Length: 383
Image (tube, helix red, strand yellow):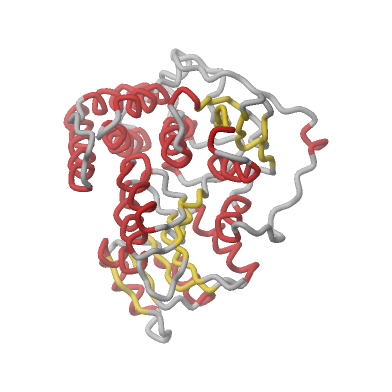
């Protein structure tokens, strides 16, 4: 079946793998967006011939417009351009793979435009919470998860007979490059150390989040909103091989899991082909190649970012938005060598606790909480 895709964040890891899927199945790529990578997006334009393209950076957009003057692709820029791509009339599915809070507004606008949402931007649900889920219900819009863990849960739920059948969900985590390390051993690790992920090829921001395990904390919050689960019914388990991507436990204690090689094109494709199954560009999993699969409890004392997120969703309201906003800054500061690894969790926690206690928040409240958390981190560090 033909699909008309608007791909937000086409030059990143998820974006380029999404285009692999589109290429294999002949999907129509109507819109592409990126931040500033002119060379990469120019090549994508010449291959996929989108009708509309947005670059967030204005000068990059001007350069791109000059470069592709021989094509029929329209170039826009900034948040207004991103929203124009998210609501583009010619697209029926919006695959949101941008990184960070920048993804929230275009997701909301795409829902209002009644687009099917393939969601790889976890910050949309972490910060937006009920704003996103309530609007999706109101507009009758499906939110299909692209994160490997949430896709695994979504796939396992396809055999679920009713809402009360699920006892809990199991969210797996690779443990990142620092699995088994103590706080003292991590005192002087660098960003270069943290970027050496054992299993996944991801962008720098998400790879650092995996090292601090903030990524798993954010996914914990995302799972709560996607699957309408109680906090205590979401369990995190370290699974080093990244083969079992997540699971659900039914009331009879049967566990249903989704397994596959660690390749994001599986969840990307399922979000685009749902409810159908199609051949994929991913190699088949051979369990004998692995020999054994291992599972461990998380080390909450060393990787305190998980606790920050658990506390944030327990407090509710704007606290998750604050935790996420603080992390976007502390993550960058660690990448730049301006703070230590252990500072990330501390800064995120303090900024989260300082969030205003507003339960029935608006988008403006979320954006304000995000800004306040970012400012808190910068002022604390002295940047």
